[in-house]
Image 1: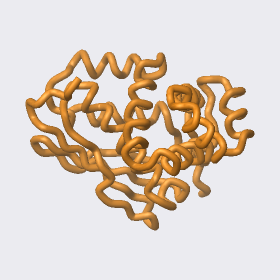
Image 2: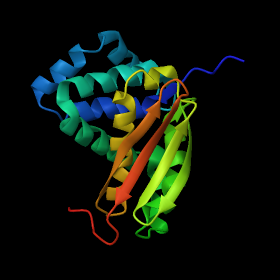
Image 3: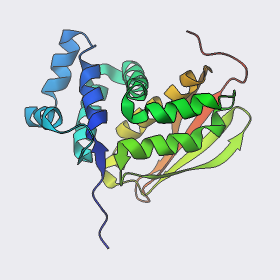
Image 4: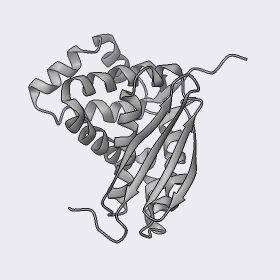
Length: 200
């Protein structure tokens, strides 16, 4: 049976485009020039609740990573997910997390899976495979080859997931721990300082 094509929610890509407008003009121009203009038009013309081919997200993600470099890309994708959380698509999910907020992000990781499924379709199956005080390991399986041909998209995903720590006001990090491109598997390691608030 053939795999259903991976897709990204249009709403997420519209937030992506809006997020680009916050960058300096030189950065915006360079990033947009790395992606065919037809791709940007596709995002702008689509209805917010629809879906686009995952290649749209991959092309834009790689353009940001190539131009901004590791540190600025991390900040871009972290704040991008925070921006998506403010939108109507994820607002209910975020409010649910905050209602049961306790200083253990490991308890929220199943919610991250639900949020991921609102933004991406046929991209990965996620589950928490290990939890300990101050640490958790999330496994992503059935990743399409497009997402594992290099580590750019998965690194951006780790940066995005780090927004969860800020959401619950904890200092920490999320990194791509390992990836098996042939198997379509990647693991993200979350670490946080118990009891230490995120610097505001």
